[in-house]
Image (cartoon, rainbow, N blue to C red; front, side):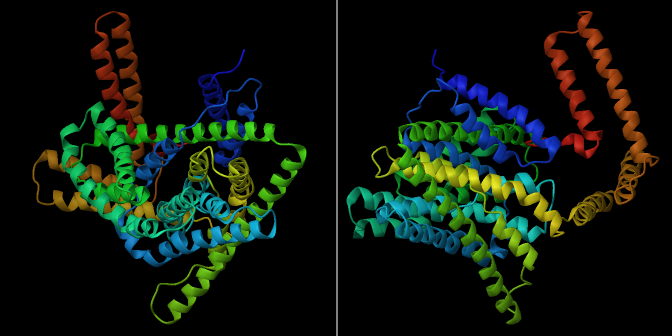
Length: 515
């Protein structure tokens, strides 16, 4: 009996959960393993072919990921890193597309518009793949910020190029109307995103601390993309600009319950979208490979291998070119110190492709010339970069001594101390036994930050609190089993104990990671 798409998705999710546990224990990057799993599940006998609506692909897969990333990327960092962001988000994308066109011209000779489309698809690296590895091996903050910021804005350049190529292919020429649309797409998308983000931020408080509030976030993410598309503006820049605007306008008294709930939901949804994209691409690749003759498949594989090599090489060349520019500007007193050679190599090597490349390849119209070859090549680039670069990223960081665990811990300790100082400064003017209790708590907390000790008052209080909470949980279960408390009150008190436990638990127990 044929396997349905839903059954394939459930199978991949089950395999993904299992592989995440394996990668966590073996310290392997999960995106590459997930990509291989998507191919394996798609190759199962009877796996279905899923017809894909191209316009839906970009909105479904890219909009939530952009909102999730842009909301956490500070506007100040974007201003400080304007030059490198422009270089890697614009120059690097165009250079990568150019190298793809050159390789095509030297090898199989696809039509120029097809080669440009392929270049736009494989050009933007995916920071999520790099972050999955770098989260356990923190690197210099400027490197981390560049990688995350680049992925927000290079998608816009790549999709503008992608849209232009599709338009030229459909119309047969690059006319004045197309040039006009492209010229206003970027600035128009940014202005629309800021205005829409400002409007949404005013409506945000109306849905605070409700399930509907989380749903509104998803509706807003998709609506931003779809409205920008209808207006022929850059949907990527509109989505990024709106998310950053909302994050900037969010007040410090934003309900924490809503923030915790939203974070958990968005993290799960973004991970699910990655799983779904790899499955869909695996299904497409299986159909394409099955329809090719041996000669066609050999030709496609050689071409894909050449594109993979070119994409990796041009990324490294661009990284070192930017270092030369940075050194020149630094000597002239016009920029901060340039990245070291080791950091530059790391930036060049973190060029893994991921969800954006998958989504744009899936968004190609069914009648696009040489679509199967383009899709297969794009998937090969994703797989190869995730496996080759993603699999070697952690060893390279250790080899080049780029990990900064000690510096990252010191940075966090300094921030935590500053937060405690802020509370203590305010408490100076407060009198009474209640203020004294809170003041003593913050003093003990601050003194135990940089030099934690099992015998310190903070850690001893933590152990006593956790033991007391465990006994409360046992008593709560006894009350439920004895039918002395109803199910609604049981859940309310259980959640109350959960929050209390999170408040006193060690830091590693308060984090939810992807693997």
